[in-house]
Length: 502
Image (cartoon, rainbow, N blue to C red; front, side, top):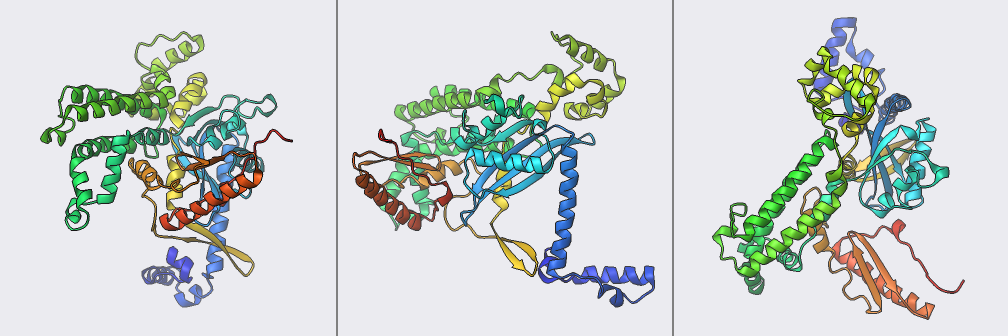
């Protein structure tokens, strides 16, 4: 199909197939029929747009009458264009479906209100009630999860006159949270990671940098420890990815890893290295053991804190097994559970798993109270995996006007700078890569770096002095950007002046 769009011609094997069909069915020369079919770039693009519009209309019409969950995020493309992606998950024909709802450009800024307005305008245009959203998954950016001004606060009933979704189930992406935990390195481990990046492969160091090689060898215990730990973090990261993950499957993954961290901490504290096989081959000193135990303890505490809502979330046992002996205080639930326990047809369905059981066509109609609770756990997105995957496949998008039609072309650009995405170590590598961004900044400027957000605080009684100091820092950041390959999103830069004067 890509060749058809680019060249306007069908591939040769495909043409031969059509030619044979036309000769057999119509008994007419295939050439006379094929030459009347328009396959120019514009025609093919127009037909694709028309089919896409039909698919979108069908989807939006269905969403007008059903509940669904949504995940969305914004990202700045290489050409400084801010793009907002939204994916939805819903139940149709006894199956859970995930679809791209829209991709919209943020024309003003990337603040929470702008993001909310884009979503609200789209829902208004498509006549989809905002109250049909039962859960929303976003990353941990303040523009998304801010308590008073975040995107989710516009959906939640924070302001009485803006009560759009009174029972919204808000979820902070579990993958994003795990990345935040993984980047929590001690100063010692952070320095060891820097050595790994600088050295890359030990054999290359013999004739390059003997001092770096010596430091690399001195840190081999840290490297062995970090290698195993990041491998385990990466396993969890992969388990938290995927299109079919729900909250029922997510909680056991989080709980199991917490128990595993605690076991690592106990074993390594008594020099039991079965979980760290490389360390058993090295001469680990007491200081090394103490540093690793301390790091695992910090990791355990941070993990437990960031996932508190998931860990404390009670998943009703009747969702996992409605046929077990369950005590339920709610009378309405008791009556419906009794009805399920005597339904022989559903017992057969339960053999295929709890998800297929709850998606049976009779459940929403016959047991609406149970379904309203089970639905949240089944279709709520535990992460923003879909939008991150979507951004990972998008290059830069440009519009070219051809005649009266607008043709969108995806331009794929190789990654020349930065760090690869998708791995648990990517966050740590990114932090190392931008660690020197504030070097050379005037000492009267205070740089604050959080993830990929940089704030500069400058204080003075003279506005001209502040302007000069900020300009000097801006010039240094521009120079750093040219050498490092990282770009600043101009549409996300803002200046706030705080003064006692009016």
